[in-house]
Image (cartoon, rainbow, N blue to C red; front, side):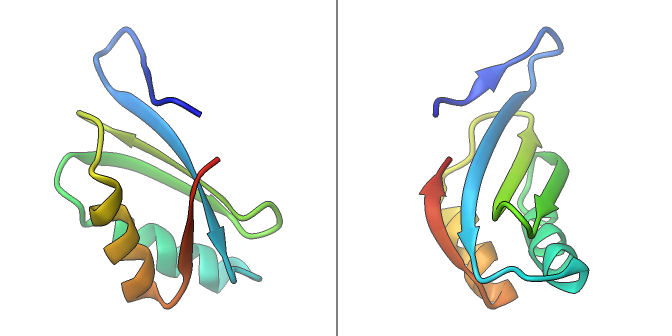
Length: 79
């Protein structure tokens, strides 16, 4: 999956995260990723393990990995 840029100039990327099983997990992952500078929106879905991130510019995967690790989960990679 490649990041997509929409007409407003923001970038949307979808990541796979393992270990999420409930709404609390979704909130923990979303909260940590939301703290990355430039992130405007995060939607985590435990049932699919997918996390959709909208940001002003493409994010460094290591920054996303660190945020997911901080939440107690594992970033598998881009979906």
